Length: 311
Ligand SMILES: Nc1nc2c(ncn2[C@@H]2O[C@H](COP(=O)(O)OP(=O)(O)O)[C@@H](O)[C@H]2O)c(=O)[nH]1
Ligand SMILES: [Mg+2]
Ligand SMILES: [Zn+2]
Image (cartoon, protein in one colour):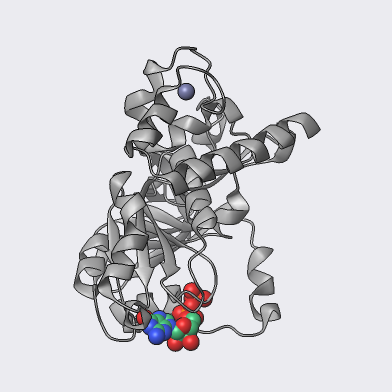
């Protein structure tokens, strides 16, 4: 047994499962020395890059070094009562998956997922799956337009017919990707079409089937077959991560297409609602901000303001 570099794929404190690049997995505990070190209250998390070494007795492994992080996916508790819980570190991107039909895409929900991604500093992509069910390519383009205008990469896929799969495969390769979206849109089917070895269960009809998963505390990394740096993040779901803790005054930062205008409003604390001289609303009037995105902004802002009053 020698020292090695790996990534934490599972664990919630105490024992961590570390996967090394050769595909081996070891259970390891944090070395006592690191436990005492002040790491700015930084807790170890799934997705952290670590060095492991055999322990003193040579029978197990311990984590002796922790790599730099480039971002975290965290769940903030309402009212900040329990502070922040880190679900995963070093997530590279999030795929927000919806279907063009069966079920119909829910625009407000797409925007909510995107806000959560932005609030967590995650690079988001929008995926419209089931394009085989679309009335026309123009209908899919119309769905995609507000997101493309906002600067998000949009993928059009069909797990059934094979459209867009090569593009998705390239997107996942060598990265840690969180896949999210409502149930029934084809997330599992899409991942199975890309990597049949994953053998994910599809079309979960009984809601009780998934019940146990929601009680899972932490996230898990699922290795992509044949791709030593590629992983999927299995989290309790980005929707559960929620927008808690995001101040309503910062929501505008989570709409990338608003950014060029944010310094331009007459009032510095403009909430882009009814204030005179609002550059975001001027951009809306010119078509530089899409109406559906602006409506989502107002809706989510109202929601955040209501939660601020409660807590
Ligand atoms: N027509 C069509 N059906 C699909 C496609 N992808 C998935 N489905 C079907 O949609 C249903 C839900 O798929 P599933 O992968 O379980 O969705 P998930 O809940 O998002 O993981 C299943 O009946 C799939 O066969 C697609 O691209 N086209
Ligand atoms: Mg599924
Ligand atoms: Zn404004």
